[in-house]
Length: 434
Image (cartoon, rainbow, N blue to C red; front, side, top):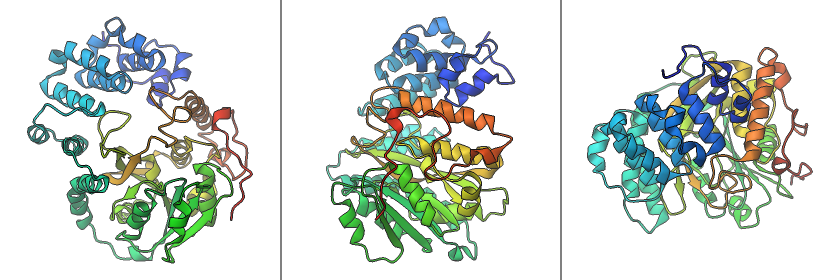
Protein backbone atom coordinates (compact mmCIF):
# COMPACT_ATOMS: atom_id res chain seq x y z
CA UNK A 1 0.00 0.00 0.00
CA UNK A 2 2.76 2.43 0.83
CA UNK A 3 4.58 1.93 -2.48
CA UNK A 4 8.12 1.42 -1.08
CA UNK A 5 10.64 -0.61 -3.08
CA UNK A 6 13.72 -2.40 -1.78
CA UNK A 7 15.70 -1.25 -4.80
CA UNK A 8 15.45 2.45 -5.73
CA UNK A 9 14.36 3.34 -9.26
CA UNK A 10 16.06 5.99 -11.40
CA UNK A 11 13.22 8.28 -10.34
CA UNK A 12 14.08 7.67 -6.66
CA UNK A 13 17.75 8.36 -7.32
CA UNK A 14 16.86 11.64 -9.04
CA UNK A 15 14.71 12.74 -6.07
CA UNK A 16 17.45 11.83 -3.56
CA UNK A 17 19.82 14.02 -5.61
CA UNK A 18 17.17 16.81 -5.55
CA UNK A 19 16.79 16.70 -9.34
CA UNK A 20 13.08 17.38 -9.36
CA UNK A 21 12.72 18.48 -12.98
CA UNK A 22 14.76 15.51 -14.20
CA UNK A 23 12.49 13.25 -12.13
CA UNK A 24 9.42 14.85 -13.71
CA UNK A 25 10.30 13.25 -17.04
CA UNK A 26 10.67 9.79 -15.46
CA UNK A 27 7.99 7.25 -14.62
CA UNK A 28 6.78 7.35 -11.00
CA UNK A 29 5.67 3.72 -11.15
CA UNK A 30 7.28 1.63 -8.41
CA UNK A 31 9.07 4.58 -6.81
CA UNK A 32 8.78 5.33 -3.11
CA UNK A 33 5.69 7.14 -1.89
CA UNK A 34 7.84 9.57 0.13
CA UNK A 35 9.75 10.63 -2.98
CA UNK A 36 6.56 11.08 -5.04
CA UNK A 37 5.11 13.39 -2.36
CA UNK A 38 8.41 15.27 -1.96
CA UNK A 39 8.57 15.71 -5.73
CA UNK A 40 5.04 17.16 -5.91
CA UNK A 41 5.71 19.63 -3.09
CA UNK A 42 8.96 20.85 -4.66
CA UNK A 43 7.34 21.34 -8.05
CA UNK A 44 3.89 22.59 -7.09
CA UNK A 45 4.38 24.12 -3.63
CA UNK A 46 1.22 25.15 -1.79
CA UNK A 47 -1.07 23.33 -4.23
CA UNK A 48 0.58 20.02 -3.38
CA UNK A 49 0.33 20.59 0.38
CA UNK A 50 -3.45 20.97 0.02
CA UNK A 51 -3.84 17.49 -1.48
CA UNK A 52 -1.58 15.41 0.78
CA UNK A 53 -4.29 12.85 1.55
CA UNK A 54 -4.86 12.24 -2.15
CA UNK A 55 -1.09 11.85 -2.60
CA UNK A 56 -1.00 9.15 0.10
CA UNK A 57 0.67 11.09 2.95
CA UNK A 58 -1.29 9.08 5.55
CA UNK A 59 0.54 5.89 4.55
CA UNK A 60 4.05 7.25 5.21
CA UNK A 61 6.14 6.17 8.20
CA UNK A 62 6.29 8.51 11.21
CA UNK A 63 9.75 9.82 10.34
CA UNK A 64 8.78 10.37 6.69
CA UNK A 65 5.68 12.31 7.74
CA UNK A 66 7.83 14.62 9.86
CA UNK A 67 10.39 15.10 7.06
CA UNK A 68 7.59 16.19 4.70
CA UNK A 69 6.37 18.65 7.36
CA UNK A 70 9.88 20.15 7.60
CA UNK A 71 9.96 20.50 3.81
CA UNK A 72 6.62 22.32 3.79
CA UNK A 73 7.74 24.54 6.71
CA UNK A 74 10.62 25.96 4.64
CA UNK A 75 8.15 28.15 2.74
CA UNK A 76 4.75 27.59 4.38
CA UNK A 77 5.22 27.27 8.17
CA UNK A 78 1.54 27.85 9.04
CA UNK A 79 0.50 25.11 6.64
CA UNK A 80 3.15 22.81 8.15
CA UNK A 81 1.69 23.37 11.64
CA UNK A 82 -1.78 22.58 10.29
CA UNK A 83 -0.54 19.28 8.80
CA UNK A 84 1.19 18.48 12.10
CA UNK A 85 -1.97 19.09 14.14
CA UNK A 86 -4.01 16.82 11.82
CA UNK A 87 -1.53 13.94 12.00
CA UNK A 88 -0.18 14.42 15.53
CA UNK A 89 -1.63 11.15 16.85
CA UNK A 90 -0.12 9.04 14.08
CA UNK A 91 3.24 10.85 14.23
CA UNK A 92 3.61 10.41 17.99
CA UNK A 93 4.03 12.78 20.91
CA UNK A 94 7.85 12.98 20.94
CA UNK A 95 8.26 13.56 17.18
CA UNK A 96 5.39 16.08 17.15
CA UNK A 97 6.93 18.02 19.99
CA UNK A 98 10.31 18.30 18.22
CA UNK A 99 8.56 19.32 14.98
CA UNK A 100 6.60 22.09 16.76
CA UNK A 101 9.80 23.37 18.35
CA UNK A 102 11.56 23.33 14.95
CA UNK A 103 8.80 25.28 13.18
CA UNK A 104 8.41 27.80 16.01
CA UNK A 105 12.17 28.39 15.97
CA UNK A 106 12.13 28.71 12.16
CA UNK A 107 9.55 31.50 12.39
CA UNK A 108 11.39 33.25 15.25
CA UNK A 109 8.76 32.53 17.90
CA UNK A 110 9.44 31.80 21.55
CA UNK A 111 9.22 28.09 22.32
CA UNK A 112 6.35 26.94 24.57
CA UNK A 113 8.04 23.70 25.68
CA UNK A 114 10.40 22.89 28.55
CA UNK A 115 13.55 22.52 26.47
CA UNK A 116 15.59 21.02 29.34
CA UNK A 117 13.13 18.13 29.50
CA UNK A 118 13.00 17.70 25.72
CA UNK A 119 16.83 17.64 25.48
CA UNK A 120 17.07 14.78 27.98
CA UNK A 121 14.72 12.62 25.95
CA UNK A 122 16.55 12.94 22.62
CA UNK A 123 19.58 10.83 21.80
CA UNK A 124 20.80 11.95 18.39
CA UNK A 125 23.78 14.30 18.38
CA UNK A 126 22.08 16.63 15.89
CA UNK A 127 18.82 16.84 17.87
CA UNK A 128 20.58 17.47 21.18
CA UNK A 129 22.81 20.17 19.72
CA UNK A 130 19.90 21.76 17.84
CA UNK A 131 17.68 21.85 20.94
CA UNK A 132 20.49 23.48 22.92
CA UNK A 133 20.72 26.17 20.24
CA UNK A 134 16.94 26.71 20.34
CA UNK A 135 17.21 27.12 24.09
CA UNK A 136 19.81 29.86 23.61
CA UNK A 137 17.52 31.49 21.02
CA UNK A 138 15.01 32.11 23.82
CA UNK A 139 17.44 34.42 25.62
CA UNK A 140 17.31 38.09 24.65
CA UNK A 141 20.83 39.50 24.34
CA UNK A 142 21.28 42.89 22.69
CA UNK A 143 25.02 42.50 22.07
CA UNK A 144 25.49 40.32 18.96
CA UNK A 145 29.10 39.38 19.83
CA UNK A 146 28.03 38.22 23.30
CA UNK A 147 25.20 36.15 21.83
CA UNK A 148 27.53 34.71 19.21
CA UNK A 149 30.07 33.57 21.82
CA UNK A 150 27.30 32.05 23.95
CA UNK A 151 26.17 29.98 20.97
CA UNK A 152 29.72 28.81 20.25
CA UNK A 153 30.14 27.69 23.89
CA UNK A 154 27.18 25.32 23.55
CA UNK A 155 29.08 23.00 21.21
CA UNK A 156 32.53 23.70 22.64
CA UNK A 157 32.47 21.01 25.36
CA UNK A 158 31.57 18.18 22.96
CA UNK A 159 34.24 19.29 20.46
CA UNK A 160 36.96 19.59 23.12
CA UNK A 161 36.01 16.19 24.52
CA UNK A 162 36.45 14.49 21.15
CA UNK A 163 39.61 16.44 20.32
CA UNK A 164 41.24 15.40 23.62
CA UNK A 165 40.74 11.72 22.78
CA UNK A 166 43.16 11.95 19.85
CA UNK A 167 46.90 12.44 19.98
CA UNK A 168 49.06 11.90 16.94
CA UNK A 169 52.69 12.76 16.27
CA UNK A 170 53.82 14.57 13.14
CA UNK A 171 50.69 16.60 12.45
CA UNK A 172 52.56 19.86 13.00
CA UNK A 173 54.61 19.21 9.83
CA UNK A 174 51.52 19.27 7.60
CA UNK A 175 50.82 22.63 5.97
CA UNK A 176 47.12 23.46 5.45
CA UNK A 177 46.03 26.15 2.98
CA UNK A 178 42.89 27.96 4.22
CA UNK A 179 41.20 29.98 1.47
CA UNK A 180 39.01 32.93 2.51
CA UNK A 181 36.88 34.55 -0.23
CA UNK A 182 35.78 37.99 0.98
CA UNK A 183 33.55 40.72 -0.39
CA UNK A 184 32.05 43.55 1.69
CA UNK A 185 32.51 41.70 4.98
CA UNK A 186 34.25 44.48 6.91
CA UNK A 187 31.87 43.88 9.82
CA UNK A 188 32.93 40.24 10.16
CA UNK A 189 36.41 39.76 8.67
CA UNK A 190 38.35 40.38 11.92
CA UNK A 191 36.40 37.67 13.72
CA UNK A 192 36.95 35.31 10.77
CA UNK A 193 40.72 35.84 10.57
CA UNK A 194 41.21 35.73 14.34
CA UNK A 195 39.43 32.36 14.43
CA UNK A 196 41.98 31.05 11.90
CA UNK A 197 45.01 32.56 13.63
CA UNK A 198 43.78 30.93 16.86
CA UNK A 199 43.69 27.42 15.40
CA UNK A 200 45.29 24.74 17.58
CA UNK A 201 47.12 23.54 14.46
CA UNK A 202 49.52 26.39 13.70
CA UNK A 203 51.11 25.26 10.41
CA UNK A 204 48.69 27.08 8.12
CA UNK A 205 48.67 29.60 5.29
CA UNK A 206 45.62 31.85 5.06
CA UNK A 207 44.97 33.08 1.52
CA UNK A 208 42.41 35.88 1.58
CA UNK A 209 40.90 36.91 -1.75
CA UNK A 210 39.23 40.32 -1.72
CA UNK A 211 36.66 40.29 -4.50
CA UNK A 212 36.57 44.06 -5.17
CA UNK A 213 35.03 45.03 -1.82
CA UNK A 214 33.40 48.44 -1.57
CA UNK A 215 33.71 48.76 2.22
CA UNK A 216 36.73 48.56 4.54
CA UNK A 217 37.25 44.79 4.11
CA UNK A 218 40.59 45.10 2.28
CA UNK A 219 41.90 47.73 4.70
CA UNK A 220 41.22 45.42 7.64
CA UNK A 221 42.82 42.43 5.90
CA UNK A 222 45.99 44.40 5.15
CA UNK A 223 46.25 45.53 8.76
CA UNK A 224 47.42 42.04 9.78
CA UNK A 225 51.19 41.59 10.01
CA UNK A 226 51.08 37.80 10.52
CA UNK A 227 53.26 36.21 7.83
CA UNK A 228 50.77 33.32 7.48
CA UNK A 229 48.24 35.67 5.83
CA UNK A 230 48.53 36.25 2.07
CA UNK A 231 46.27 38.64 0.18
CA UNK A 232 44.97 38.49 -3.40
CA UNK A 233 42.84 41.37 -4.73
CA UNK A 234 40.53 41.54 -7.74
CA UNK A 235 40.03 44.74 -9.73
CA UNK A 236 36.35 43.91 -10.38
CA UNK A 237 33.77 41.61 -8.81
CA UNK A 238 34.29 38.07 -10.11
CA UNK A 239 32.37 35.85 -7.69
CA UNK A 240 33.42 33.42 -4.96
CA UNK A 241 34.60 30.60 -7.23
CA UNK A 242 37.05 32.57 -9.34
CA UNK A 243 38.33 33.76 -5.94
CA UNK A 244 38.73 30.15 -4.77
CA UNK A 245 40.45 29.15 -8.01
CA UNK A 246 42.92 32.02 -7.89
CA UNK A 247 43.83 31.04 -4.33
CA UNK A 248 44.10 27.33 -5.16
CA UNK A 249 46.53 28.23 -7.97
CA UNK A 250 49.05 29.64 -5.49
CA UNK A 251 48.32 27.40 -2.50
CA UNK A 252 51.22 25.33 -1.15
CA UNK A 253 49.55 23.19 1.52
CA UNK A 254 49.26 19.42 1.58
CA UNK A 255 45.56 20.06 2.22
CA UNK A 256 43.18 22.86 1.31
CA UNK A 257 39.99 24.04 2.94
CA UNK A 258 37.74 27.12 2.92
CA UNK A 259 36.14 29.64 5.25
CA UNK A 260 33.94 32.49 4.03
CA UNK A 261 34.96 35.95 5.21
CA UNK A 262 31.85 36.33 7.38
CA UNK A 263 32.16 32.93 9.12
CA UNK A 264 34.04 31.67 12.19
CA UNK A 265 36.04 28.44 12.64
CA UNK A 266 36.28 26.54 15.91
CA UNK A 267 39.92 26.42 17.17
CA UNK A 268 39.96 22.62 16.73
CA UNK A 269 38.56 22.59 13.19
CA UNK A 270 41.84 22.14 11.29
CA UNK A 271 43.31 19.66 13.77
CA UNK A 272 40.21 17.44 13.82
CA UNK A 273 40.16 17.24 10.02
CA UNK A 274 43.87 16.40 9.97
CA UNK A 275 43.34 13.66 12.55
CA UNK A 276 40.60 12.13 10.41
CA UNK A 277 42.88 12.17 7.34
CA UNK A 278 45.78 10.64 9.26
CA UNK A 279 43.70 7.81 10.74
CA UNK A 280 45.15 5.23 8.32
CA UNK A 281 42.44 5.18 5.62
CA UNK A 282 44.46 5.32 2.39
CA UNK A 283 41.36 5.88 0.25
CA UNK A 284 40.36 9.05 2.09
CA UNK A 285 40.62 12.19 -0.06
CA UNK A 286 38.14 14.67 1.40
CA UNK A 287 36.45 15.27 4.77
CA UNK A 288 33.63 17.56 5.80
CA UNK A 289 32.22 18.71 9.12
CA UNK A 290 29.04 20.42 10.31
CA UNK A 291 27.95 23.99 11.01
CA UNK A 292 25.08 26.06 12.23
CA UNK A 293 23.96 29.46 10.96
CA UNK A 294 23.30 32.63 12.95
CA UNK A 295 21.34 35.57 11.56
CA UNK A 296 22.22 39.20 12.20
CA UNK A 297 19.91 39.26 15.22
CA UNK A 298 21.80 36.39 16.88
CA UNK A 299 19.07 33.80 16.14
CA UNK A 300 20.09 30.30 15.00
CA UNK A 301 17.96 29.00 12.13
CA UNK A 302 18.36 27.19 8.84
CA UNK A 303 16.53 27.18 5.54
CA UNK A 304 16.04 23.42 5.94
CA UNK A 305 14.25 23.97 9.32
CA UNK A 306 15.64 20.95 11.24
CA UNK A 307 18.13 19.93 12.48
CA UNK A 308 19.92 23.24 12.99
CA UNK A 309 23.31 21.50 12.97
CA UNK A 310 23.92 20.38 9.39
CA UNK A 311 26.63 19.20 7.01
CA UNK A 312 28.74 22.10 5.70
CA UNK A 313 29.78 21.61 2.07
CA UNK A 314 32.08 24.63 2.42
CA UNK A 315 34.12 22.82 5.07
CA UNK A 316 35.59 20.39 2.51
CA UNK A 317 39.14 19.58 3.56
CA UNK A 318 40.98 17.77 0.77
CA UNK A 319 44.38 16.62 -0.46
CA UNK A 320 45.42 19.47 -2.75
CA UNK A 321 47.68 17.87 -5.37
CA UNK A 322 45.57 14.72 -5.73
CA UNK A 323 42.31 16.61 -6.21
CA UNK A 324 43.51 19.38 -8.53
CA UNK A 325 45.52 17.00 -10.74
CA UNK A 326 42.46 14.77 -11.24
CA UNK A 327 39.44 17.09 -11.37
CA UNK A 328 40.92 20.59 -11.64
CA UNK A 329 39.15 23.67 -10.30
CA UNK A 330 35.71 25.06 -9.44
CA UNK A 331 33.33 26.03 -12.21
CA UNK A 332 33.68 29.79 -12.63
CA UNK A 333 30.08 30.83 -12.03
CA UNK A 334 28.30 33.08 -9.53
CA UNK A 335 26.90 30.54 -7.06
CA UNK A 336 26.31 26.84 -6.36
CA UNK A 337 29.68 25.50 -7.57
CA UNK A 338 30.90 24.22 -4.17
CA UNK A 339 28.24 21.51 -4.13
CA UNK A 340 29.19 20.44 -7.64
CA UNK A 341 32.90 20.35 -6.75
CA UNK A 342 32.30 18.13 -3.73
CA UNK A 343 30.23 15.69 -5.80
CA UNK A 344 32.85 15.78 -8.55
CA UNK A 345 35.42 14.62 -5.98
CA UNK A 346 33.05 11.83 -4.93
CA UNK A 347 32.40 10.80 -8.55
CA UNK A 348 36.09 10.83 -9.52
CA UNK A 349 37.52 9.13 -6.41
CA UNK A 350 34.54 7.04 -5.24
CA UNK A 351 32.20 7.27 -2.24
CA UNK A 352 34.84 5.70 0.02
CA UNK A 353 37.06 8.76 -0.54
CA UNK A 354 34.70 10.92 1.57
CA UNK A 355 34.26 10.98 5.35
CA UNK A 356 32.33 13.24 7.71
CA UNK A 357 32.99 14.69 11.14
CA UNK A 358 29.71 14.95 13.05
CA UNK A 359 30.63 18.10 14.93
CA UNK A 360 29.77 21.76 14.18
CA UNK A 361 33.23 23.23 13.55
CA UNK A 362 32.03 26.31 11.62
CA UNK A 363 29.64 29.05 12.69
CA UNK A 364 28.14 30.88 9.72
CA UNK A 365 26.52 34.28 9.52
CA UNK A 366 23.19 34.49 7.69
CA UNK A 367 23.31 37.94 6.10
CA UNK A 368 20.36 39.56 4.38
CA UNK A 369 22.71 40.90 1.69
CA UNK A 370 24.51 37.61 0.95
CA UNK A 371 24.27 35.68 -2.33
CA UNK A 372 22.45 32.78 -0.65
CA UNK A 373 19.81 35.06 0.88
CA UNK A 374 19.16 37.10 -2.25
CA UNK A 375 16.13 36.53 -4.46
CA UNK A 376 18.29 36.73 -7.60
CA UNK A 377 20.93 34.17 -6.60
CA UNK A 378 19.57 32.40 -3.51
CA UNK A 379 16.46 30.97 -1.89
CA UNK A 380 14.72 34.08 -0.54
CA UNK A 381 11.09 33.23 0.24
CA UNK A 382 10.86 30.07 -1.89
CA UNK A 383 11.84 26.41 -2.11
CA UNK A 384 14.12 26.79 -5.03
CA UNK A 385 16.10 29.10 -7.29
CA UNK A 386 15.47 28.31 -10.99
CA UNK A 387 19.04 29.09 -12.10
CA UNK A 388 20.53 26.96 -9.32
CA UNK A 389 18.18 24.12 -10.25
CA UNK A 390 19.13 24.21 -13.95
CA UNK A 391 22.83 24.15 -13.01
CA UNK A 392 22.32 21.37 -10.45
CA UNK A 393 20.45 19.17 -12.92
CA UNK A 394 23.07 19.80 -15.63
CA UNK A 395 26.11 18.94 -13.52
CA UNK A 396 24.44 15.84 -12.16
CA UNK A 397 23.86 14.55 -15.71
CA UNK A 398 27.47 15.47 -16.60
CA UNK A 399 28.76 13.44 -13.64
CA UNK A 400 26.60 10.43 -14.52
CA UNK A 401 27.88 10.42 -18.11
CA UNK A 402 31.49 10.29 -16.94
CA UNK A 403 31.31 7.91 -13.97
CA UNK A 404 33.52 5.48 -15.85
CA UNK A 405 35.71 8.18 -17.43
CA UNK A 406 36.43 10.58 -14.52
CA UNK A 407 39.29 12.24 -16.44
CA UNK A 408 36.57 13.89 -18.55
CA UNK A 409 35.39 15.76 -15.43
CA UNK A 410 38.56 17.84 -15.16
CA UNK A 411 37.94 21.58 -15.39
CA UNK A 412 40.77 24.08 -15.78
CA UNK A 413 40.67 27.76 -14.85
CA UNK A 414 39.21 29.96 -17.57
CA UNK A 415 37.47 27.11 -19.42
CA UNK A 416 33.84 27.29 -20.43
CA UNK A 417 31.64 25.04 -18.31
CA UNK A 418 30.84 22.01 -20.52
CA UNK A 419 27.05 22.48 -20.40
CA UNK A 420 24.47 25.27 -20.41
CA UNK A 421 24.83 27.93 -17.70
CA UNK A 422 21.91 30.38 -17.12
CA UNK A 423 22.79 34.02 -17.70
CA UNK A 424 22.07 34.84 -14.06
CA UNK A 425 24.95 32.59 -12.97
CA UNK A 426 27.61 33.87 -15.35
CA UNK A 427 30.45 36.03 -14.07
CA UNK A 428 33.04 38.43 -15.42
CA UNK A 429 36.13 36.33 -16.18
CA UNK A 430 38.20 39.31 -17.22
CA UNK A 431 39.12 40.29 -13.65
CA UNK A 432 42.66 41.33 -13.03
CA UNK A 433 44.59 40.20 -9.99
CA UNK A 434 46.66 42.69 -8.06
